[in-house]
Image (cartoon, rainbow, N blue to C red; front, side, top):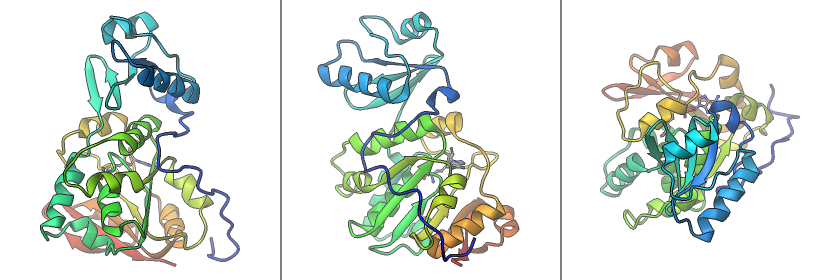
Length: 287
Ligand SMILES: C[S@@+](CC[C@H](N)C(=O)[O-])C[C@H]1O[C@@H](n2cnc3c(N)ncnc32)[C@H](O)[C@@H]1O
């Protein structure tokens, strides 16, 4: 689509908080909401709010184990409102959001080490970045850190459940060091959205840089917390048409991450511009 005459019919609907619209939640997993044992009013209210937003049943925890709550409610998984945030319990395993990788990368940047993602996107203070593939949001947090308060970062995640866990974590997670981490997380706008739909509704030149980091067939990144992504993520990457839409939406460039040798990048017309041991980034100019 040409850059002129295109109206933005998808105005920002989400301030940086945890009130995601997650109507698709039920489709992903059979879930119920519960709390920690002996919840305070805060956790109880939070569980009620999530139940109202998602349409999922809220089950009183009492003194029961999570396994007993799941069995009693006939659900496979539970969203558990804990004192520190939201956890996902599935078959005896609990997943919690943690910005592990972002923490390490922000520390490294503060020590003047370079970051392949920052270099590939040519991120600068004040830039507007649309991250089409949130995952655990490490790249989005690093971007928010580098573009600073005068910039803007919005991140899209198609898995409703992952989007909710990450948005909640970004809104509530606390950690004293590095001091830049939490302010960067709080500035991110995290949306539950499919990039293919989102891009087609976005205005021309709405962002400086549009970024894709699709799920690789085999996961090469062994970062902690990735199990959660593997379990919930949507596979596959952008089509040639999606990349064209991204170029229309971008004012400067579109960047995509791929595994070496970067076959998908080549197929989609990206120029490989940053290569590390196992991954490469490709860039394509805005339209
Ligand atoms: C490899 S992860 C991204 C990791 C992320 N860059 C980070 O730093 O944590 C890819 C993510 O993109 C999401 N995804 C895949 N297709 C999508 C789509 N069409 N729209 C939005 N998100 C999508 C997946 O669900 C998955 O969580």
